[in-house]
Image 1 (cartoon, helix red, strand yellow):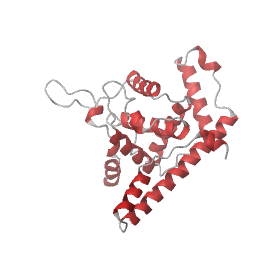
Image 2 (cartoon, rainbow, N blue to C red):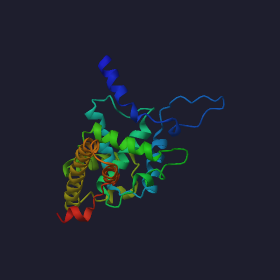
Image 3 (cartoon, rainbow, N blue to C red):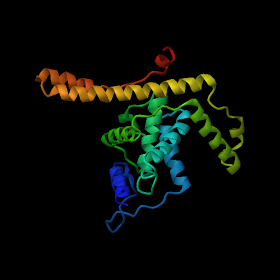
Image 4 (cartoon, rainbow, N blue to C red):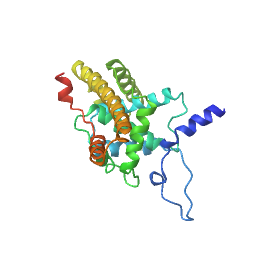
Length: 235
């Protein structure tokens, strides 16, 4: 029990901040966490998806990352009433960055939040680092895994009637797209690990560097890593 409690506390960074919760009650107290409805979760996801101009493939990839968080932590980190926004948002941002070569920067994602919800830049940076650490930078999505989730979701939508008439005519990711997905996610994974190693190395070296050298180190650390789909395809 003690070990499980410690693991839960380890993942408290994913707990939604007060600014992500409902407004303060009339008596000045914070409202209790309430289990979100399907409509509330759907609206939250849809608003971010539209505002961030995400690719449709990010829907499935974000679900894959949510389930990976659950499996990697053996259930100690899973969507709860107290953290579902942060978990879902961070998985959406990660999926967009991995797949979409025109993905927004974190500063732009902070502007794509639904009304009444706030994810400041610093908070997004924290969540991005947290999710990569929990997943141990394992962000590669094999085509087989993507296809499994795609057909499972498709089947659920058809059976529930939520997919509408167009769901049966939609085509999954083709072979070329599936190969790109594997390549892009593998490249992002490798680049993220490399960036962490370089950052740690630079931090160690900067202790013995002069002021001018430290400034160059800072500039290198603040330079975001972007992955172009076209570059990956031409490899």
